[in-house]
Image 1: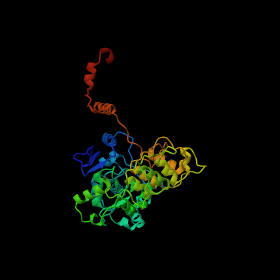
Image 2: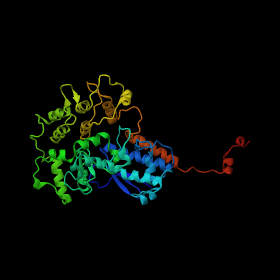
Image 3: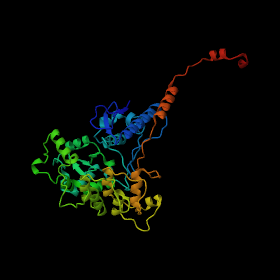
Image 4: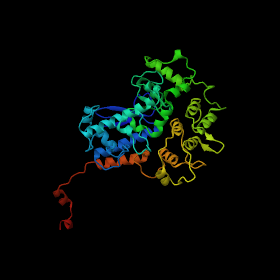
Length: 421
């Protein structure tokens, strides 16, 4: 039987662990509230699966291609009670090998695509070839820039199959572990071969436009060659170097002649957004610019400015969300994604200027305000109050109490004379 609980002795915050007879895995949520919601939701799904009650499944986003897609209830995943898939024992014994049984292939894919910190995200594209061919995403990013074939920090080309989606860089497996230990507010690590469902069109374009070369122009501008981290460095050396680079920002040149510089980092960020200059925006964020900065000239949020700069609205753009979703074309918004991944929150109120259909759809899906159900949108986790949880536990205990059985003769003895007639 599987169980879920808050992670014990975890180095990172907001971690919870899922324990089954076959494995134990640790996941990291972005906040304590999200962590508690995940724990409550998984526990409810497990309880429903054990008792055999029908419950609303919590499903991961299926492959947008439609063919070969599947939805799995969390309780079924952890208990192995789904009639359409192999048991956990069979999945564990065949994991990593291509068997002829389709169900074991599904279970293996499910397990290998969900790693620490990975969460399904929306995808606006009509198809996702990376889902069916995970190695293609790695190759696309490497082909975009030769520097992406090695680690941005130590230069190692061994197992450089990880990325930081908010920094837009490729990492080796050793440095990715250090990045993950710093927390998601510093670096959000994903695997290019395992977490294919975590890469939206915007994130992929963000990595392609930044990459290791552009990133190091900003983050290592003042780095002396003798201080560069080597591929043979120890874990302690990696920790010191990466902390100095991204947390202390010691190597960032605050007066770089090759990058635009305004009086404040916030003004530098706004100017770069309006020019759709992602390199300048990265430089401003490295200078601690606020990703939620407001343009005072028209009182608009930075994310809205980024959307308008990437895809300006036409006068005839549809105003309703439904019409916008229908007319939206595939447009990537790497600048807006850079802001969001680095802490920007999309405002609830719309900007003073119209947004294009694609930009409107981006806002709806990112903020979770889409009214229409979508296969590639993950809804918010349920908020379960303590009183509701206690009431549910009490009702469950009451239902599980054994009822005292009374024989027919005892019932007849208890019945009155009139009842016997």
